Length: 289
Image (tube, rainbow, N blue to C red; front, side, top):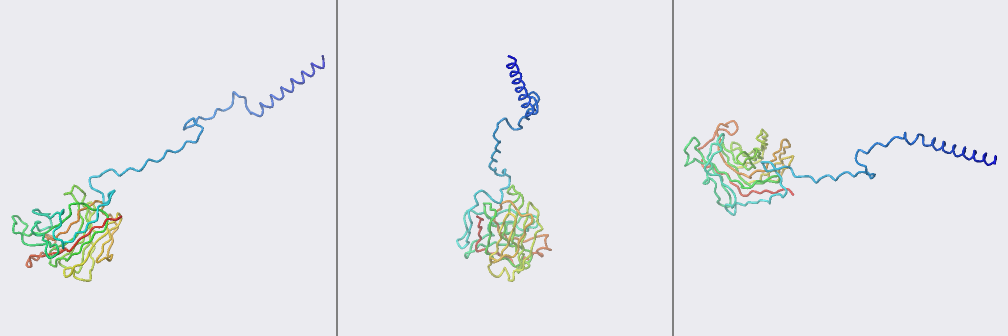
């Protein structure tokens, strides 16, 4: 009996020692263990997956059309050998005012001998302070980035400009954006390149042609890129600009006019040789792919 009691005591002592050993391994009692911090995302055990970025949205529409569109406009090629093209505008019965000393007349735009003529002359219908008439031809549609070319022969005469350019402005409810090829009649061995961005100009560059632009037809053009304008003469690059490039689509335009109050730029207008005629064989617009 005494032996059984002794064995039982020994067994109880062993069990007590095992219990104490387990408590030492845990390091703390169940009541004092720290509770894990709650997740800041969710209670899910899987790692959260970042949401897929939404598809980019189009730039909100603006009043002025941008220079590029989702679908580039169709190429344009107008050969005046076919006569007057349909779907274009000829300015008639109004004036730009300011330095333009002409009223635009439809009769000053003619299509003869396979060419278009833009004419400066005395205005038979003059009623105000503007004694002369000029010719202006333009597209109805607007065009953006791409290559613009014209084959033309300029007017040689003090005080006049014959031109090829893109333009949009307040009359179209747009900012004034413009890219120019201009021949000043006082010296047609040179061509002036210029551009305006939201009405800001002063980007004139005069290029020496090495020939007289009033004597023969030559091809002049420019490429309008988002960050650059590059001008060409007979297919060869002659000038480029990369500051404050226009961003608004414009109409393709050609005009011939005489100036007033800009004698330092054009020289005083000499009207003893009227009518004066600038001629155009063709023009072309090629959008970038």
